[in-house]
Length: 68
Image (cartoon, rainbow, N blue to C red):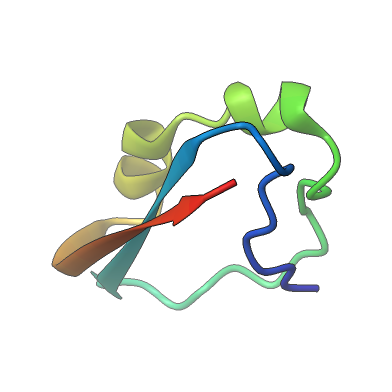
């Protein structure tokens, strides 16, 4: 489930980046996910490996900042 940005009060600015990809292969059908609350696993996510493994081509990107 998507959980929008909600930085704790007083923690300063937090940058959020959205990436849009085009894939050369069908999306995998599995239940693997990383919980929003599991910061350890989120920190270990390797974006470049994910892009390579699923043959992703970056189409667009944007970002915004939320002040906590």
